[in-house]
Length: 143
Image 1: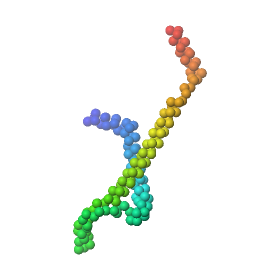
Image 2 (image 1 turned 45 degrees about the vertical axis):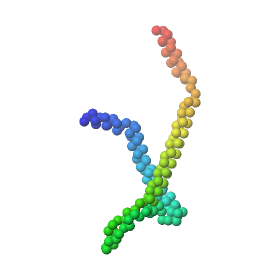
Image 3 (image 1 turned 90 degrees about the horizontal axis):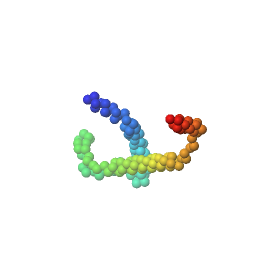
Image 4 (image 1 turned 180 degrees about the vertical axis):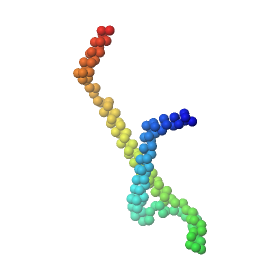
């Protein structure tokens, strides 16, 4: 059991796991932002364009609800809620687009950094480094 805990501690404290955890947290928050964008901004505009009251209310009723004598539904409605499915597809497309753009910018930035490193000219050593190199070479030749 002690080896298991030791191995788990090593795994959990590695940088990649911590980076991944941060990514999951930021991704969750980003997902909420995109969901709000879709639900609160895009879908109301689309509902105006389509003349309806929004996609989330679109459904195909298989079995309608049957009311009981006291007004409460005796049998719940059975329906296919395809409007919610459309809304989730829009959420996914927006999230995928944002991730694609972020990765593309990151890759471009990384390529730019690589080019800067490749084209950086080698600097001539400072006078102190030259002097130390000469002293080292002189000491080697005396041996």
